[in-house]
Structures are given as structure tokens and as C-alpha cells.
Image (cartoon, rainbow, N blue to C red; front, side, top):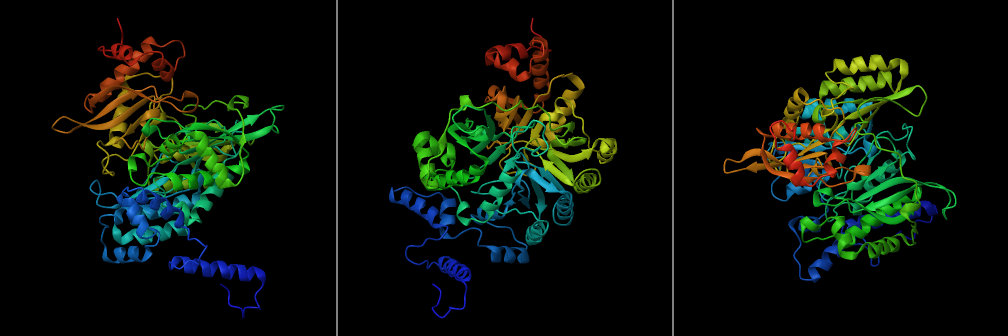
Length: 581
């Protein structure tokens, strides 16, 4: 590729030029024989389905025509003309983290991504500025420890994307068929209980993805999480890949130390948690193994049926052992197989440990868990929290999958002042047993798929319950507006799935109970299929009062509901005051 008269170049310069020229040739569709462009792995997978006489879904046809990331000029024209996308262009925009929210909102939503959910105070200030100048003046914390901006007009999309980049953040690949925000333990590096700091792993994988175009445009979206064994969970077993830290003692056949177990195929919205892959990984192995798993998914994921285009279904079709053999082949070596029973279990997850003041592993320092009403922050609150983090802590803000945030590294002596500053913003460090675990998706005020106003109804439900039920044990209530389950209703103590009821399309919920993750792993079971929003608060009140009346000493709602079949629970709850005869 390099002309022969370039004798003046060093070998390193020649290699750089060779790679550069090959990249140009590949992008122009003229990759040299024997070479391949990054998109070829996807085209080969699509070709296999076409050769089998199957029809690609519309999204695959879009990706086949050209990489969706190659549309900056189109975004410029769209912004200049002030127009929204149509048809399959709506899908392409999601590769930049831009979601056209019509008909719920005639505007864009921009989803960011930040590895391990961590950002600095100056970055939160920048997000506040962007929200105020170009969006609706607020941001939502998501269930992937992330931020979303809403009510963005088409004229502002480039201003938003460039301002996000200027702040050292990105929205690239935050939507569509891509690997979503890499989550990790929110107390990574500061947790007295943790086995390993997940921040370097999340950050390394984040940047690997951003710089490998072939890791975009997967058969469907893909979730990855790292759990370091700390006191706050990250729901790693609900991800396509979940890495869970474990300790291995002396005499186990491998060097003693901290490793990771890999769980595959978690997708609770489709009724499944991740299954243990049977391998033991050093921390250094996690990122290359994750990439190998994604590449096998690219090669074998369904391109003709969006409902079955997730990793869970690839593993079910191939079988776990053949799938792991394909991962070994992709890596070029065999992974270490090791029994889960020989590993020391992680310490317990503290339910609602993401709320309140907690000592760090660093003597004299604390992290403060700030309660955010259903995950929403207005611009002035973002600036205020950034100031608190910079003034009283290290300037670090940690988002959690529970739609709240932590401010870390606050000295003991500064806790009262930091608490007062947070309360002055209309926020706090204390939550009721209901509010501490209240999770809600965007709902129908901002999402076209949602059947219900989840955020508004979650707040109304919490107001009602706090006045009428004296709970002394934490409980998680998850409200999701549609079966996509962005709020993961299947892992809530009480899961609420939005539905429309009757000919008048009244907003209501299917009610499920008994879900949990980690040490409480269970999929929630449906107890009521259709409860109108008007009747929902009273229904949940009866459920909670029935639990209080019939539980054993100190028994959690999760354990209580696990003891009974649904029919028995319904009989206990369906009395006027929740008290059985």
C-alpha cells in the first residue's frame, strides 16, 4: 500500500500510513483482497440469513446500506432546516443517542453514556447548561446509571452533541442496536465490603467499544455490567453479560485471589436471569472476553426477528457449551473452567443502601446517597449538586441503577454542611421505605411505547402509601409503562406494568410481586392483571397491610411473598383492610 519512494519513513510511520490507507480503501468499498472492513462481520451474518431464504428486518436493511454513524452531514442539514427524521432515519439517529420521541413528545431525547455511571462536578454543570439552553431544563437518571435530556428541537441537535463532547462525555451508541452504557458498582473504590474496583474495567470497555466500529449495529441492543461485590447492587444478572466478583480461597486448584464469574443471557423482560458460564476470569481477562462474547453474538444473533434477537436466544439455540466453545475460538484460547461452588460468595447487598450517609473504606470519608424523585433533576439542582460535590467532596458524582446519585469523599466534619446544602435544593438523604426503592421509566409523557404516566403516578402512589402504611422494612416498587420493561418490573418486590383497560383505554397496571435480583433473585409473579390507576393505591395499600399482618418477625416482603402461592396471597390481600380473618 505504501509507495516505494517512501524510504525516508520509519517503520512505525510506514505501519501507520499503511493502516491509514487501508482504512480509506475500506471506507470507499475497495478493501484490498484478503482484507476486511469493520462492517464485514455484520454483512457476513446477514448473508447467511439471506442464503437460508429468510428476510432481514427493516433495521438490518438500514445497516446493510451504510453504517448509521456515517450521517453527520445529514444531521447538519436536518438541524439547518429544523426538521425531524422520518421512517427508518428515526432508527439511524439512535446511533448518536438521539431519540425522536413522537408522538409522546414532538422533540428529541438525547441519552448520554458514562462508564460505571461516574461523572465529575464540571460535567454535571455542563449537562445542566445543555439542558437549560437546548432541552427542557431537566435531566433524568436512568436505570443504567445514566442521564437523558429531553425536549430537544431539531435545530439544537448538533449543539447538544458537540456540547456533550466538549464536556468530556458522549452519546455515541447510546441507543439502537448497540452496547449500552457500561454499568458498574456505584461505590467502586470506596466500598468497605467490595472485592474489586470496577471503574477501570468499565472505563476500558467503554473506550474499546467507542473505538471499534464493528461493535456497533449488533442484532439488537446489548447490556454489560460489572459487580465488584460492594454493598450496593448493580443488577448484573439482568444483563446480557454480567461480571460478578468472587473470592477463591487457597487450595482450590487456582491461585487464591479475586476473580469474576461471567453470567450470560440475562433479560428479565423476557423472563430470564443470566446463567453462570462456568468460567473463572481474572479482572484482566474480562474486557477481551466480553468483546469475544459480543463478536459471537454478532455472528449468530437473529437478523430476521427483533423479538428473538437478544443473546439469551442465541445461547438457547446453540447451547451454553457450544456457545462458550465459540467464545474460546474467538479468543484463540480456552478459558479456565471452575466450579461456582468453590468460590466464596460476595457480601450482602444492602437494600436501599444507595440512600443516606455511609462510611467509605477511606477512614474519615463518607458517601452521601441523594434521593431523586423518580430520577428527575432540574438544571438548578444539577448545578447545586455539582457545587456540593466540589465543595465538600472530591467533585465525583456517582449515578446508580436505582435512579439516584451518590456524592463521595465527604469528610466526617463536612457531612452536616453537605446535607444542609442538598436539602436547600429540595432534595434529601432520607427516604421512606417506599420512596427509597421507587423506580419508574419515562412513561407516556415522553415515550411512545408507554401506556401510563409512570413517573407522575409513581409519585402519587408514594404520597398515598406514605400517609397510610407504616412500613419498617425497605421495599422496591418498579413502574414500567410497557413490556420493554425499562424499569425492570420483574425484579421489583412489587412490579407494575402499564396497561390500557377497557374500551375507554383507562390507564392502569398489571400488578406483580416477589421479584428480586442478586441474593433475592426471582422473577415477579402476576397477582392482578388489570388494576386501574384509580384503584391502584388502595390495592397496594391492602397488599402491604396484609404483609405487615401476616409476616414472620423481621421477614421482608420478598421472603413473605415467596412463602405463598398467588392464590393464597390474593386471599390475604383481598379483604377490606388487608387483615385476614
